[in-house]
Each structure stands twice: as C-alpha cells, then as structure tokens.
Amino acid sequence: MTAAPPPPPPPDDAIAFAEQVLTLLRQGAFTSTYKYAVLLGLIELAIEGVSASGAPPTMVTTHQLAEVVVRLYWPQVAPFADAAGGVLRQNTRGQAEIVTLVAAARAELGGVTIARAAREAPARYARLVRDVEWKLVQMPLPRLQTFGRHEARFIYDIAWTADITRAEFERGDRFANAIDLRPGVGAHLVRLDGLLRPLLHREWALQVAAINRLPVATLDAHLFGVDRVALRPVLAGLRALQDDRCFYCDQRLRAPEVDHFLPWARVALDAIENLVVADPRCNGSKRDHLAAPPHLDRWRQRLRRDRAALVEVADAARWESSPARALGVARGLYLGVRDGARVWSAEAGLIEVADAGALRALLAA
Image (cartoon, rainbow, N blue to C red; front, side, top):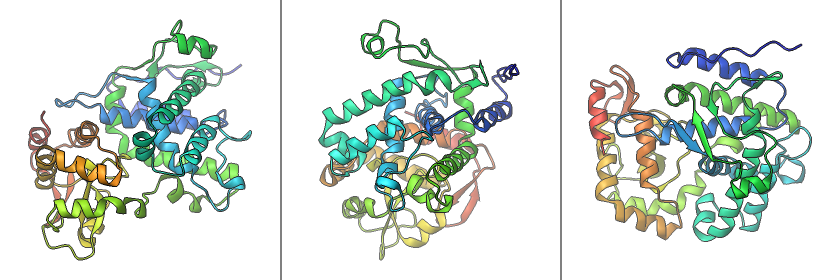
C-alpha cells in the first residue's frame, strides 16, 4: 500500500511548494524527460504572462505549453556526435515521442532555427505544435502530479483524464485546453525561477546522460546552452541600430558580441527585442545578471522607439520578433525584484537596486 501524497502547500508558502516539486522530481516513475519540459514550460509561461501590475497568470493553455516545449526540444534534437543515430535518446524505453516529432520536423526543414521554421514553414510548424500538444494532453499533463498511485494537484487543474482519445481532443467533446494554475502557483513559479530552472536543467541532463550512457558534463551545453554562432545573422543589423556602440557602456565597438538583455539562463528568449550588441568586457561582466535600472530604461525606450527598425533587422536575418513576449518576460523577471536586490551596471559592476518602484514604472504599459 502506497502512502498518501502530501497535502497541497498553502498558496503563500513558496518554500513548501518548492519542497513538493523536489519530492515530485525524486520519483523514479517517469521514463522520459517530459516532466522537466512541462515544468520548465510552465515556469516560462508564468514569467511571460506577468501583467503590468506584476500579477502572474492564473491560467495557460495546452497550445501555449506545446509551443514552449517545442522550443525546448528543438535545439536538443540537433545531431550529437556520441548519440546513437545522432539524436540523444530521452526515454528509457526507446525514444520519446515528442523528441521524434520535433526531430522529424527539424530534419525536414533542414536544421533551421525554430524561429525560421515558424516563419518560413508555418503550416508544418503548426502541425508539429498540434501533434506535441496532443502528446502533452495524452501523457504527462494527466500524470505529472502523481505521487505513487495517488494524484495530488498542487500545480494545476485540468478538465480531462488520461483516457482521453485523439478524436475527443480534436473534436473538443471532452477537452478544454485550459491549464488552471492552483492558487499562488503562478507567483511561486516566477519567484522560484532562479532556483528551479538550474535544478530542472541538471536533473534533465542527468537523465539524458543515464539513458545514453554518456558523461553529463558533455551534455549541458548541447541541451541548454546558447549557440553564439547562431546569433551572428543579427549582429550587423543590431550594430547599425546601436550606431556601432556598446548597448551598456556606449563605447565604440571593437569586438562586438550579441547578448541576451534578459538573461538566457533565466528564460530562453531569442526574439530580436531581447538581443543587444555589447563589447566583450560588458558582456563577460554582466553574464546572467539582470541589468540595472538605467540599462532597463534604455532597453524599454528602444522597445518603444525602434520597434519597426527591430522588425526590419529580424526580417533581414529571418529572425523571430516578439515584442509582447519580450515585455512580458521583462515584467516577470524585474517586477519581483525587491529593494536591496543586486543587479548589474556597466559603470559600477554589481550594485543595489535603490527603488523597486522605479522598475515597476519602467515596465508599465
């Protein structure tokens, strides 16, 4: 007889929520990496959905989650030298079906970035997202919150069960695509991002390493790293937009590098609105820190003033443009910053945020 699952944590207790997530991750019942993808997807959607007032979302859709999961797996299905067949296995019993779907689409489209796939082959991309959405509906979403033989819905509620059929999913007879976050969960996911994300990355890499019998150290960059070479198509356009000056220190660029203004380690956002050009000193110093209010102010002004120019750069490079998503992510990352939190400044290195209210003002609609 299996023990009853722990009771749902109180809506205002982030630590209890984190402990329950850790308990869920320690279970050995999952044969694929889906649980990591779903949890990371929910974190990203919670961050992106933060409103101008700082309120996190209370609901996301299965379609939104499928798009994020496709983005997560897309770089992971690139050929890996030590993987049998070239693609890393992500299921203990063969290959995970979502990985197979994403790998087939990427190979069919010639290995392009996910942004180019969505722009240049919208019908194929839409079919992929729909197929992945179905697999999420069928498998991990109804089963994720299970402790032993008992279900404990402490993250979300859904209106279907694991016996739903594809026909019912397509017709909508028994299917509503809402994933209703439990009270307080949206705020917990946003607040705990800096703790849960690296943990989920680590656990994901460990499972892939075990399945493929490879050293985990060789997998981190392939699974979750930034492809600096892939960012080169936008370098010239952004450099011209910045008048050949570093976005942070405003000095003339000599060895320019493309940087994610909102750190890649906090959320995987490659949209043109999140990319700036910096000199190596600033880029190396900023690393994964949030930038100080003066830099945020400049970024916010660019988002308003240069929206059309950014779209032109994206179009020329066949790149993703998503101003609404970029602003949502900025709100998700910055509006939870409290007085005294440490952020990065090109002038002073790490400094203390003097006024969290100033951040809220900068990110108002």
